[in-house]
Image (cartoon, rainbow, N blue to C red; front, side):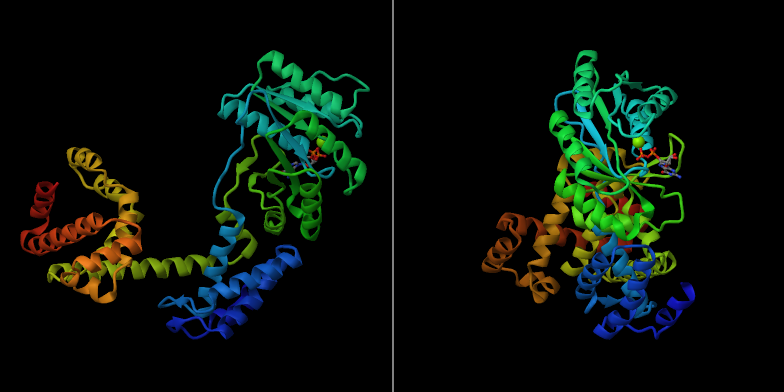
Length: 442
Ligand code: GDP
Ligand code: MG
């Protein structure tokens, strides 16, 4: 893989916007990487198209090649598609809430049921009961009972001959009486999607009314992932996905395929046969694994950091000269927000506990910073460089454009004035004096 990618990424380094030809060339490699990772073909196609549109015209960072820049854009798009939000399990509702595990035979439902039950018991202090509804495979119910003993989670006693819907009802009833918080329902699978399986699972769902219906799928599923996820989602309605055997060789393309056809979050990953081999889903890790170009991604990230560093240094120089316009202020606000707002920033300085308290009172938070950024971005270039020209009518326009009030605009302008005055002082005072004058301002 690496040798093939080499050709694209050894291209000339240049700055400027990505041209369509750059993007197309790099996308050829990305396409192969996705197919090798077993992302389903239709998903690859639509993904490539979306990202191509996004990438053309994007800026190429200094010191990276256009191909490398494309890979970074692809990586970020992958992370976004895989879902950067980590949703956890929905356990809202009157207890006992049911969590239903569905999927093909051998996908890892029973194992995953016990893993999740263990986690809920130990980490979330829930009272959990498990029940196996698998009456198709011999000894399937006993398998869950054994795992239950191992993880010290109660399982519903087995009644021979009882059918899945009745077992589900009995489980809910027993859990209600026993004061359980959660009932994990481990359903039967089949080797392939078939109607009798779907009917059975749908009936169980109707009887139990689960708050989560999780499709368990093997990371090796490959091209079939789309069909499996699509069938289950259309017929049963899923709320989440769990991908097992991520500890194997599979690159995890199924995650992208299934996420795309169902739009359901991927909640967990199974990373082995042992009961604690369960991980929460992290989109960036799976994206890296699917794309297999981690080196390129971190290279571009490093380049971006370097540029930020350079910008910060340039800003510092400008400040010293007392040239501090609203563009510079916007840059500073953005950096401040990245560092966790004013509070995060102050927290890094020694001996500012008291000041921090005062700041909390002044309500300087992320929302306020965002509002200030919005105000600045509603100004024209001329206004940003020379705030003196901003009179009443311009203030009105800026307020309307940023969804704020004239008062807010005034406040921001005043703050800018104060900051630029302070900047001039700082260069004379040195670091200690800077902290003192900052303290006086608050
Ligand atoms: P079910 O038919 O869907 O209930 O699947 P099982 O839970 O019985 O699992 C089938 C096999 O896969 C068992 O041997 C499990 O130990 C194994 N298995 C399940 N999850 C994982 C996983 O995340 N990694 C690995 N390596 N094996 C797993
Ligand atoms: Mg099973």
